[in-house]
Amino acid sequence: SYNTNTYSNLSPNSSPYGYGNGWVTIWTDCGTDGEIKVYLNGIYIGKLTQYFTSGTPDCGESGTLSTNKPAGIYKIEAKGNEYSWSGTITITKDRCLIQGLKK
Image 1 (cartoon, rainbow, N blue to C red):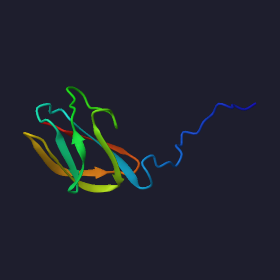
Image 2: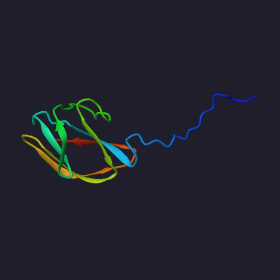
Image 3: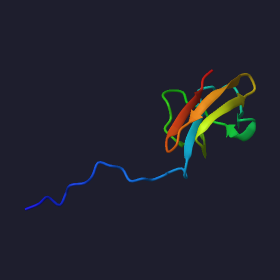
Image 4: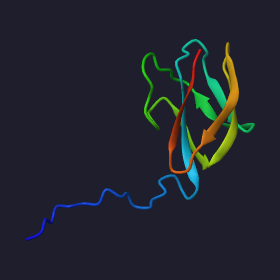
């Protein structure tokens, strides 16, 4: 006899964010800054209007800012009323990066 309930552990070759793309989810714990505008490589991608008081949100969770981009290194800049952030992030193909903007 044979077992009909055996499944492969290999995941299918899927590109959940589009071919060659990765995903980035940006969040903040800063509640005093009003809207925080976020830029990747100098291009405005959106704003954060909510903040998280504990823990790290999941990829694409409500209250975060998420976008998919071709894999690579990006300059990230963010500006609120009080704080500003600047640095680089690496977006990896088929993966989600969760990037916090900490006060």
